[in-house]
Length: 96
Image 1 (cartoon, rainbow, N blue to C red):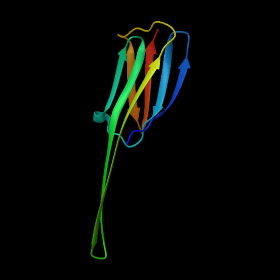
Image 2 (cartoon, rainbow, N blue to C red):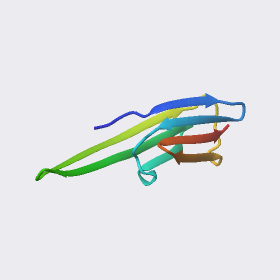
Image 3 (cartoon, rainbow, N blue to C red):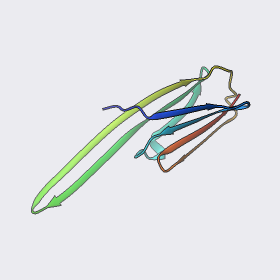
């Protein structure tokens, strides 16, 4: 399975601010790259759930990966990228 996170891009005078809603993905499974004036977001979601009820055992696995490329209209500085990930929301500041 794959999914596409919801993304919001704001342009300011000196930077772009990109917010992506990516719940349930550990930070170690999330990758942020700047390539060819595009911000690349990709990662993998792994969810395993095990339950035992009334003598029955149930295990559910769900996996999903995503890839988003966000192009910028103006040239950006690859040396000035700052990303934070908190409560399932990735926020990336990219200087022009």
